[in-house]
Amino acid sequence: MRQRLFRWRDRIGNRCDGAAIPEFIVVSVGILIPLGYLVVALAQVLGAHAAAQHSVREAGRVFVRDIAIQAGHWRAHQAAAIAFSDRGLQLPEQALHLDCQPSCLVPGGSVRVTVDWDMPLPWLPDSLSSFVSVPISASEEFAVDTYRPAGVS
Image (spheres, one colour):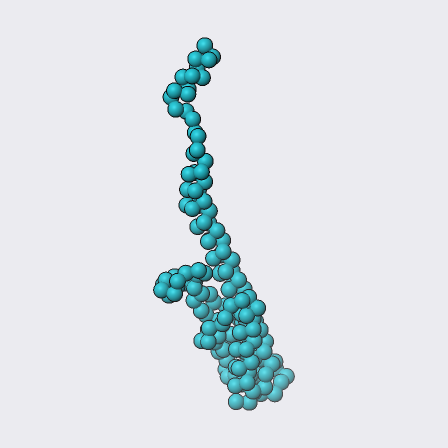
């Protein structure tokens, strides 16, 4: 009786010979590759956000310690670019903004430093990267020391 039962199962076609390879291909192509891309893209976005935060902090610190406003702008942009390059990124030219209240480098005043840019996702062609990007922004306000000489234009 038991022998009959095994023969009956073999006749029905209950075998799964060779099904592992197509299943692996479907799972790897359909799930693992997009999941891997999402992990890499998320890591790039988080790195860009950290670079933006770091560049804002460094640019603000450099700017409020400078005496001349134009030199302070130049040094702030250089500090922000170095902070971005530490993460392997390049700071876009118009991404860094310095907003002074009431005016730049006045003792007791404040400076708001902002980085705004649209980061393209990794490994996308240039034609698609203009449509698909992640907005990255960071902002911080810095106080100009009260006991310092006023800045020179």
